[in-house]
Amino acid sequence: MSDKPDHLAPLTRKAAPLKPFGSPTVAQVGIVQRGVTLVELVVFIVIMGVALAGVLKVLEVTGRNSADPLVRKQALSIAESLLLEIQQQPFTLCDPDDANASAATSTTDCTTQTQDTNPAGAGAITGPFPNSENRYSNIDPFDNVADYGGFTMPNAQCAGICGPDSNTPIAGLDAYAAAVTITRDGATLGLNNDAALRVSVRVTGPANTVVTLSGYRVRYAPNI
Figure (cartoon, rainbow, N blue to C red):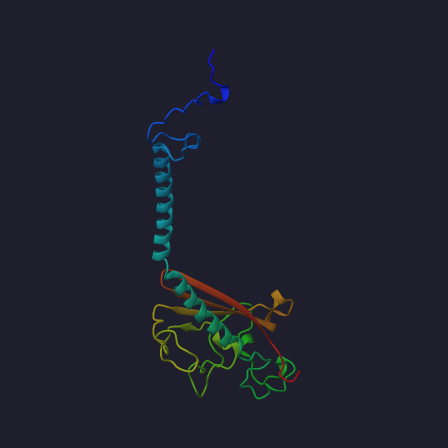
């Protein structure tokens, strides 16, 4: 037996094994590596290529037809302008040139027949009444809705699309044309057939553009 007290015995400790330089820690080993495989990458590229091709095709079609909305808008503007001009004209019991136009309470009070009943019937109205009237005349202009029946542009007085106060064609509208059709159509409104006129304005333009607008004008007596 040793005579040395126990508290004087040398202390010993089991040393932890040394780790090689650069080896991963426990926390690092637990990290899950994420990413995409080559197959997934190829599929993504194919899908994006197809989608991009579709977008480019839409842009191509839009660019090729970008002028069409402008052409249609211009044709619509011409039709609206001409229809408004016609509907603002009088449509009285007698032609505005008639001596009894302001006092007549029926067509029998007129000294001459109104244009829409000369000749009478249900067909389309063609030509102004009297036929000496002209849209561009300062002396004898159109003064009745029905005077525009059969009116077209271009015509003998206007070589293109002209405004109501000039027979000089409006620049840039050479490729457009307008035609007016007026028919007796009071029956549609529950009236006598000759009590209302249906006005249709058809405008054609480039790229086979066609616009048709229609409206009604009901006959009235100025003194009622």
